[in-house]
Length: 261
Ligand SMILES: O=C(O)[C@H](O)[C@@H](O)[C@H](O)[C@H](O)COP(=O)(O)O
Image (cartoon, rainbow, N blue to C red; front, side, top):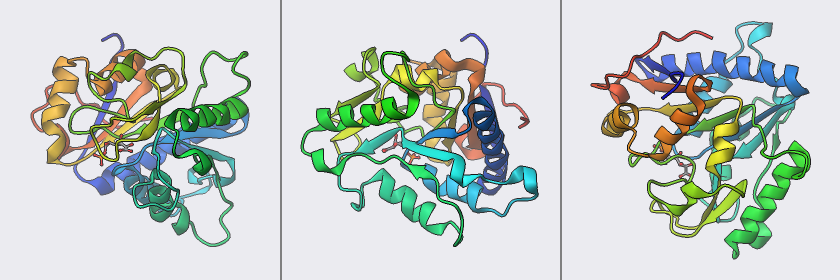
């Protein structure tokens, strides 16, 4: 690995969420400075809940404000199900976060998948890629979209987004968004950002909590083993930050850093 990734470990999810809040505000401000909006991609799993804990807390002062009207939210991966289905990552984000924004809060822009093509995952991926093209400028003028931030989870097998260990999708170099029909984590039919898009983001943050993650964290941080999370670490280095609780990194020898912006 070149420059080291930032591994921040916290005694509890509460303390993690507080630090994540400061990090998100700093990414928001950097995005606003760069292009007047904040473009962020989010995953499913346990992330939306922790994200909500971070973002629904009241602002400490003016500089700690979430400027929702400037947020453009995308999905790092999404399941090929209707938007109100219990497996939908959008439905999860809505339930955990969007529906809980206090009344009168300006709404973020949320880019969902096109429900009219759920039967065809290639078309579903192509249409989501077109959504990115429209938001990030034309496919011809930009080689890859550059997210201000991607907020990702880490599966117990080392997957992230819907990029699974050993899967041929890890070799995708052209598409921005790809379909997958054989996801080992149910449901099997999904779309996902591809590895080049993930590693091209200005910043990437993983959130991983709980003792169930410690074995895979050892594999990712000590041996790599070509695991998707390790590939992201290797390609992004210091642009990558992990927000974990102590239980998730118990016994992991990789140096932890005190959290600072
Ligand atoms: O749609 C999905 O299934 C997720 O995007 C997936 O990539 C998730 O982030 C990881 O599986 C970690 O999930 P946990 O945070 O629940 O461990």
